[in-house]
Structures are given as structure tokens and as C-alpha cells.
Image (tube, rainbow, N blue to C red; front, side, top):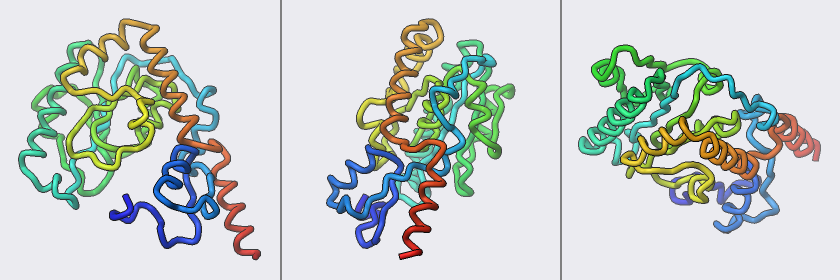
Length: 240
């Protein structure tokens, strides 16, 4: 993370989302004096995650895949792309067996590997979306499956949805909530078992959802107030 430039070694201040990133930053040698736990302005719309829990499902599963990035070596290796497509194909097959509708929301990045043709070959009835507010889709789903790294997992957890993270070998710098087993992190070979258990076993579903709420509490501070707090910090800074 230091080599990649993700940690602000030379910055005067560092605004972080929550206590997990605070502790990680301190562990990496960043002085606590320059860290502000402001929260994430992007996630202010989630307000209180416990209030946003919505059990009015519409019988669908959301797949939110993130392909190997082309600006890293893994995104330029043919075998990695082929393996990624095999994982997507396997997920589609597993979800279709449940008789639930599958919605695929690709990452909005311009250079994202396009899987539209692959999905259509598997089953033309699968909905593929590239634009739009993913939170509206999450709210309607029974569960969320994520491939690759994205904040979709936290967003699903904040909305009280069981979230599944599929292991892939092109990930790096795993976020703390995945490292600390705060989400269901599994191999593609175990997806069918866990997804069926979430659908059929209410207690297991509740357990996964509660883990998600714990992850949100640890990783997102000041939900609903982050923008105001960060602006207040900037105003105080400019007045000095």
C-alpha cells in the first residue's frame, strides 16, 4: 500500500473512513496526529444502517464483479481473464439453479472487462447493467455476490443484505473487513452450498447479516454526518 501510493506518507492530513483504517494507518507508521476519522461522504446516504435494513426482497440475486485491472499485470494476462470468466460463468450457473432472477451490475470503470456477451450466452434472461445507482438494486435483492475488490460489500452490509465475497487470485491489499472475517469470504467451489444455506436457513442468513453490521460499524464512522464533519474540518483548517 505504501509503494502503490495509497497511504499518504507525505501528506499533512489523512481523512479515513473508520476505526479499522485508523488502526491500520497507525500500524503502517502514520502519525495519529494527522489522521481524521471523518467517515465516508459517499456513504452518507446510508444513514443508520440498522434503520435501512430492508427485508422486502424481490426474489433476485445481485452479482457485482470487478475484473482484473488492466493497469496491473494480472489484467494483461490471458489466463487471468479466462479464469475470471470461468468464475462468472460458475456463479451464473449456481444462481440460476436457485430459480431466482440474476442481475449483473458491472463496475462502472471505463476499462472494465466486458462480460455482456458471455452472460448472454449463458442465459439471455440475465439482466446486465453498467450504469445506475447500485444501492437501488441492492435494496431489492436477497443476497449480493461480489468478485474482486469493491465497496459493494460494505454497501450491501449497510443495507442489511447477506454479502458473499468470492476469492480470486488477482486481488491485493485486501480491506480490513475482509481480512478480519467480517464478511462471508469463500471459494467459488463453495458458493452453491453457502448460497443455498442463506436462502433456506433464516438463522444462517441472520448470522451473515449481523457480521455485516459489525463490519459497517468498524469501517464506516459517522454515517450520515461524514460530509458535514469533513467540511467542518476544512473550514477550521482554512481559518487558521
